[in-house]
Image (cartoon, rainbow, N blue to C red; front, side):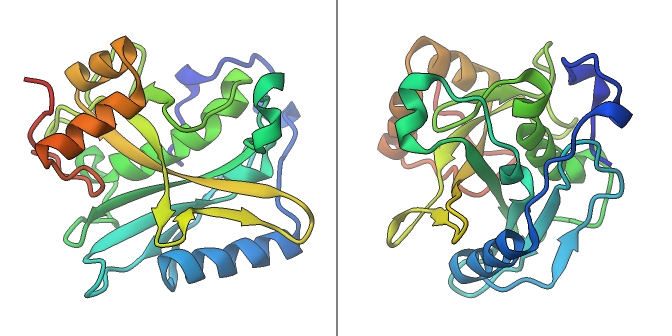
Length: 228
């Protein structure tokens, strides 16, 4: 569910691809960490078919303090990304991904205008496997190679990864087995914002959001573009 084979770069049949899974202890620690940092959750979008990683999406419900849904992947970090040697000292090999959507978002619908945030999380999580690459802060991905919008009711066609942060700083779990799992927030972008980021960098783009006072942490399909 939520897989788009046309984006896969590997030619190996799915049935022959290895599975990358957390062991039970790691999974328990990640579950507890997500609850501690993002909030308690009961609902999980369970994957039916898992050809490479078993990727669930946790639905953390809105609260008075955080009046929006937090969608957090659980399973992406079982895969160890192929990090360039110069970056290995930063322990960037493993990651989970987060996106925030409004409290009235229909999370049960599979209409693309509702489902695209979940689809995007799943595609982002699998991109390092499909393309033998890595993702970290500032990296961007598009909905498809043509830059088509994610859904008919928005112009968003890409995302940039930002560090997921709380009051203690960047959200990062170090498991008892020695794994470092980084959490990145997935920020939707308009085509002109993606071009600006590619011409400059993610830090500059996010600074423009802040300078103009435009909220971008929670998905708003009609938000104002920072590039005019």
